[in-house]
Image 1 (cartoon, rainbow, N blue to C red):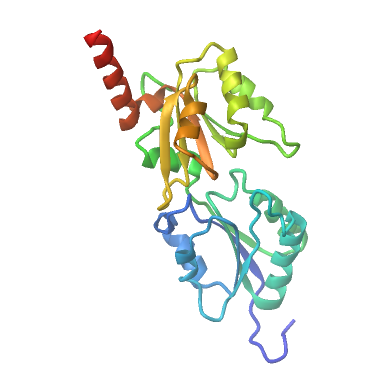
Image 2: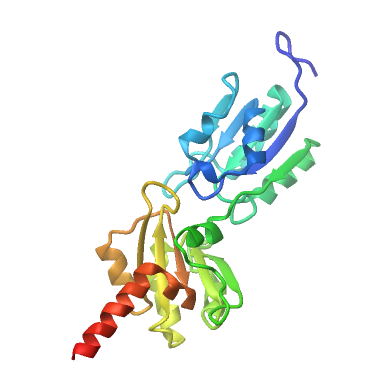
Length: 262
């Protein structure tokens, strides 16, 4: 249907992953999608610089959900996405990280399908892999880790994910998203498996100007995170691969030096 006084544009949606925070980590295909947008519905943690690529005529709508701020429910976001597409044309649903890694991207894809609006998915760099990598922590490494888990720290019911109990029993690298508030509980789970000396890293605001990292072991990471005043958003990395981080290797070297002097 052609709107009076406005050029008709075909309704379509692009689910776009923006990456972990640094605007330069978005894909080239993602930038092209932003440059062709008529409407951008963007989440929290999206760098303002990315919005500079959006055409001047495009409508920009913040629909982010952060801790303590749920102004837009998922149902409202779904409806806005469809309404804007039908009335204005190309809607870019801009999400942090990757749309399909704890991003509820598939729910939005399904809703669009139910309303016969075509959807294109453009993946983004997931913070679960990209952020540790930027800190020189590989999620897998020969001789240290053959696999990795990506787990949410807090479920919809507000409890620690049951998967963490299983992951803590494995030798895999365990990356926990949205788990900082549950750090003490998560640490207790690893302690119960006898992994007191397992290396741990906490990375706050990875890839951004506010990035901060603290390394330690399961036994002391809670105290170290408090001393470093680590805040959300942050991800947790449990695993022997953390021992490869320069800061962790420095701590071990200093410790060995003290023991040697003793």
